Image (cartoon, rainbow, N blue to C red; front, side):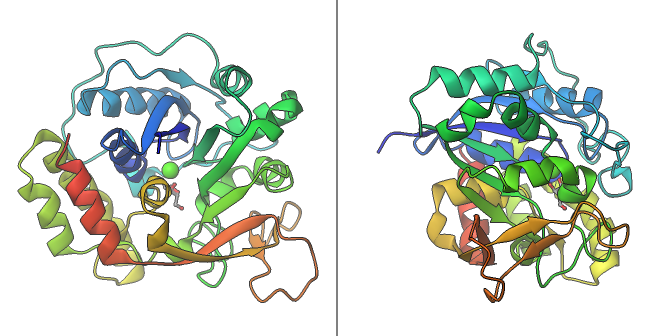
Length: 313
Ligand code: BDR
Ligand code: CA
């Protein structure tokens, strides 16, 4: 089987970084055509710089990194320095990138790449707010039918929210964009908090990253150490959830995840529940399914895969 061609749309973010490293460590299964940065965890200048830092850490400086949208479609940007630190990648001491961003807007890169490849051959992997993807779908609706699959981290059902009681961060930051993507008709696979809150970096799992002894292993241990402080205190759990790598792990080992093909709508009007993913898990509405919404993960299998792949970098 040939490697799956993907674009990673991202707002690094320590967990974005690990998701990118996992993809770059898995060339038999995944061909990363490029990274597109979006404003989210931190503002765009930092997310685009961080995306380059991670490519260089992985020894892949040739991967194109395009900067994209710096504000959500219809609202001011909300960021998450309280989780990810001032740089978005707080924790390890990583050098500034040597290479430059690739010229051209991220949205143009997404559109041009989808048009340049055969229909159904490029998968989009959004790990942040959906602003870039929605802008591409809005400005060039012809590309929607060319997408093989959108595999994204965002939303929640039974788990509630993490930025508000009812909304997950990526969807909350740009609910109008999420609404466009969820209504686009493109095949969607969603990794919500219901899954990612089961992918906890416990101490033995963090120790396993560090024990790799490589610059990548040590950086991942230091990154997960950093945001663990916040999440452990918040959730009282044994470790912090490693959200975004669920997306790239799914491309390699879909059998690690379980979900349902259901209807998911995005709340864009209520102040109270803005950005909620209203997931019809029990199929009570009769609304047409538009997403495979994951609910469970084999967490041990996930961390074994991750550690084994990171060891290759
Ligand atoms: C999501 O929000 C960000 O803080 C993380 O990078 C992840 O993509 C989790 O809600
Ligand atoms: Ca992210």
